[in-house]
Picture 1 (cartoon, rainbow over the protein chains, first blue to last red):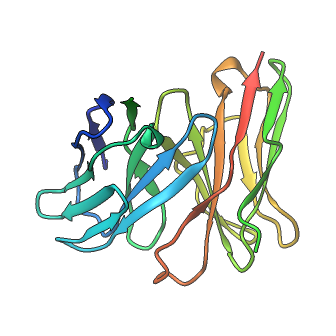
Picture 2 (picture 1 turned 180 degrees about the vertical axis):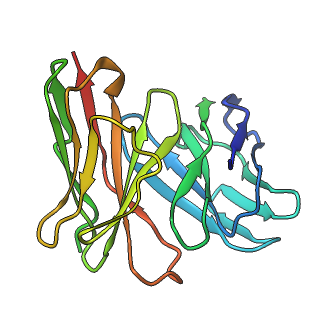
Length: 112
Length: 115
């Protein structure tokens, strides 16, 4: 059974600081996704990582994938309040199926 | 180009009633997925459908839950005789038939509250 573990589950940080969220998964997978969710809202797709060593950046967020270590990271640079949300990683359970297994999420609070 | 449309957005049901949640996929998408999100949890896969076919229902509870995606009209997730534990957000997602697209789009969700 594929398991996806995120840590930390809760993260409170000051504006301007850097931090990393980690996502470990237990079996081989072709694709890893990062999503953002605001309270009471749907999921906003942030990144899709397809290959070992993939790195993608959008604004203050950067995601990377190490398929050998079964690890993805979401790095936050110089956090701002608007980044406060819950961040989920998800792994494709079966190649091409879009059947995703999600982590429990990391609730990020950025304090002024 | 409308995204994945779900309705109702919010639904309140008493224990024992039925809940019907609808999902219209993005235009041109033939694959539909239903996920459930319990409070403070990540999403959990329930079922994967294509038009008139259930492809994978391994995440569906064995009783009271059913899903369909008819030839015409939206996909429907039906929960019979709801219980308090069914209270959750139910998300529908769709993807195109091309497996190389690597893209899945989520709807806004339907929040079910059982009282």
